[in-house]
Picture 1: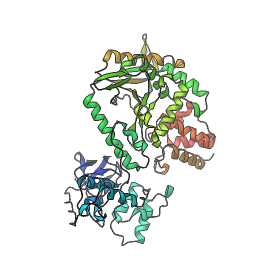
Picture 2 (picture 1 turned 180 degrees about the horizontal axis):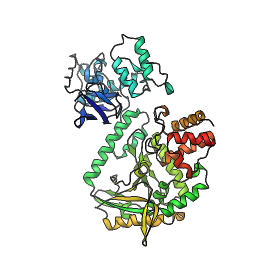
Picture 3 (picture 1 turned 90 degrees about the vertical axis):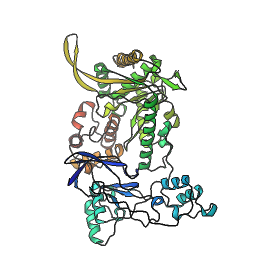
Picture 4 (picture 1 turned 90 degrees about the horizontal axis):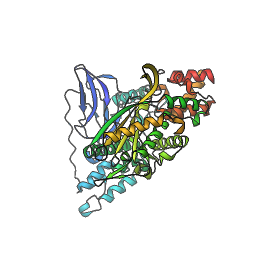
Length: 446
Length: 80
């Protein structure tokens, strides 16, 4: 094996990795393999783009060791070399006189990127306390923003030992380009190995819970940290869902000829700001159908199902930096289509900006995922507990449609239902999907 | 509108809708929906932002013509 091609990154800058964590998937001439980190710390930079082929031994990522783990920060952050066939042994942490510190406090310091060796302990026998760590964080100067740069420029910088943040960028929005790095390296041929970058975000990550979303409520958390936190929260919630909810799955193909035709006619007469998208029609139909089939709309709590009189329609929103949230459009079944469209745009905008309200996160009585909007034919979602159903809409596309012995072309989409068998079974679930289809045949009444 | 102005308008609109996308790093044939991962609401907002910035209101029937970055730039250059 001489070369490897990165086919997938399993971590992002800001992610915390432990020794042995998988960080990337690499395609070699023999096989596709997962590569692991030989370092513990925070991913500072990815140095190789997906799809790039590089020789074995090329640094793939730069990992900043958290000071709490390695002691004095003079320690340099060596790049991980996961592709190397012979992993280098990890350098042992230099010995030092460590102040007494309780494990929970050490954990906190570690997470916050605080070097406990540099804190003056105020506890018993000079022990470092939780308050000491928090003070250290508060006293820390704000961390510099991430340097805009291309992956190629970052890798070159790492290879040449150039500190990116010290390079004046001439690219778009001041981004550091490959040329900038080369110029800087030429001026400072004696530049040493890269110093570790700024410590990770100071704020405490939101607690992973259903209300997870709530990353939203803490805009102070730096983005990469928030993404990692959100990912963990989603993982915990979805694991709980799959472990406790006996899902069953149904699908049906929706005839959207009437709905799409009607929407195109309406949109042709409207300025762009008030145009509709197919999602709005699908969401409205789902909300009305949920009202008609109460077994899919409510919460399963403490061993009992509590149907909801109101339909608060959760809408799964993919965040552009990764992860998703599913806030509610309240009383979606009662909203006029235009009103629902307006609220949808507002909700998605705020979800992506991290400005959701708590009630929007807590209230959904049933959730819709509309992944078809990004190209998949069908999506079978995982139910958000304590809800009991998840509706999935695939992409709207033209397809051959046979009816009454004739073949034509119609807009269509696949609707799916994942539902909780403790509450309903396939007959009622099927009724729900059939109701959606019926409603979509009269789009002007939605 | 010349090609350069059209490109600037697309850059500005993308900057609002998908801030992490750097127009100069994107292949001209990149598809806005599939490759840049704009969903239908993002796309609507892109069209709206372009309308606000340039006065070019792209009707729905022309969406196929503006499915790629270069398609969008050419469309604006021709209609602006």
